[in-house]
Image (cartoon, one colour):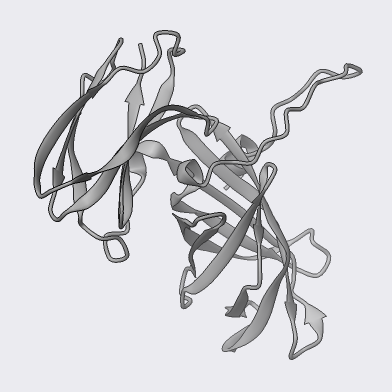
Length: 252
């Protein structure tokens, strides 16, 4: 828990210096994925932990924001709606019935209130951490403080096949690592529009192959991003009408 939390802290910056800040909003295609970590509940003082549970958070890309599933250990899942604001994920209009250390027999309904997680991208991992405050409309009181720490690595990213169509799927991406070009092989199971995009770890799109209609069959395309592409980890995304698949690629 502490290791994840520390990794999710902002980078240390020098004192007494003007540091230019480039306003930006995280890209939902990079943030979407499968996160695992912990949620710790404290007593009213906020000093002493009273329970620790494993937490699973699956986030799906929306047109502007994110939706997903929040699943605490030993509890039912709840659908969450999340807006991207600067370097944070802000929970919107989410209600949750949860049991805690003080209410073991019956779940108490809470609203996610002042719920925002700091977001930090380091190399090929994404970290989420922060305090979440809930409010009970039945009890007319806030919940005890909650501390959340989650991590998602690109190589562990899963596609929720239950909610996405299988119109197309990646077969292979090579060479990987690559120097100048990448071959992408994929299969189309039913007629759909297919496009390819490449993102850096900051969420900036560095290559686009616009979507075009393709019939059923197996396809290969060689893409050659800019020669000035910096050596680092990138995310290659195969996008089709009903969903997407993503894989990590490395530029040497």
